[in-house]
Image: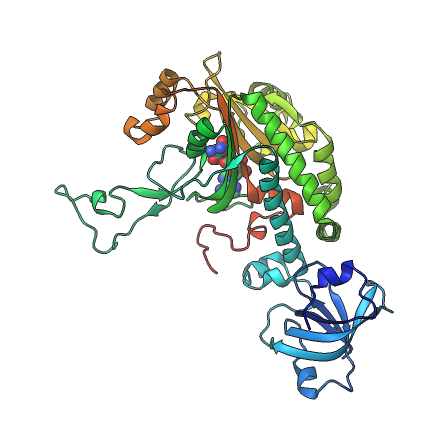
Length: 476
Ligand code: 4AD
Ligand code: MG
């Protein structure tokens, strides 16, 4: 008999048929009812065990976490919460999970506790929902770009350039660190290393994506990126996934339009295809909120938040306008902000949150930042002070997207490289695209985990990637 997945079983009418299902026991109640989950859906399948026909050994090992094979008849369910159940003829325990050792009990565990059990946490309703949503979002992103004529480009993970300046990098080496080859001056001789030079893990695929866009017109990358920043926050990972589209013959407005359209499309797709998982996560959040003081609760539920950002245009304003708003705000006047608000300094998350969550109450796109606080490749505006940058700030998340129109003028870019101390010999290949058929172009980077936080309502980035990498943590 072929096995049927629980999702399929619940979707179609199988009443009166005999089926075989597999899965892991979530609960076993009253020596009679098993809630079985096989990961295909958030919903458990109720199995009714006939104790008399079940052998003793099986009954003894029917514990939460055990892997089962069940053959039985699909019947209408008497209990509430499900429309069908299985009257088991045969129950086989394929893999036991000893109750004294199996860490997941049929009760609520804290997210902190589950992070320590990352190898098993995907078996909980919350995490399985999160990772199904993650899958759907990833698929929706590829679909969006594919449907819109973009080409997916694999940018390198090991890079010999550290021009991007997006953060501290992780070194890649084949050296035996106890026996490093030295040059005459006693310094490590990197020319003896695998690539004949210093190499690192990439912080971004953008520079390579730009080369792709200058040939294929519209490309995107979707790959892992690595940053050795020592920032232990709920929004930073040392290894995260980034989506970086790059479009030729396009300016900053085209870039913002693309980002908004893509986010709308991806969020709608996930809403449509993960309805059950999102309903579960929405409910979970409501329960969590009940434990919190009123002022810390969500003003809008998860599903409403998703609808809201699909239905409403994002507020677009310049950095300079944002500084004005912040300096006129009550928290500024009452000295409630910890960090200064002055033209020329970077906005801190408290400022971003004020703009998004208190002032505009919707996603905000900030543009035209001071040149000195943004990357060298961003296009210098006519005023000579600001660059054609854009950051998209989302409620509860902060910066979700960072992008810009790129500096396409060779001389201006060369001058920028000098100002940022980027040696020409490191970046000659990037500069050459500005010599040979240069054109205006733009792109952005979307932090995938931050998008998943928004989609699932999870408050910590460690809970939306299966195995998070953060300072002092690379277990599993
Ligand atoms: O703003 P960032 O640093 O931009 C770039 O890397 C550009 N090269 C993108 C481009 O124009 N192609 O990073 C882009 C996004 C951020 O807005 C944020 O969502 C996410 O990546 N991000 C992180 N996510 C998790 N952990 C971290 N440490 C992150 N750093 C950035
Ligand atoms: Mg940024």
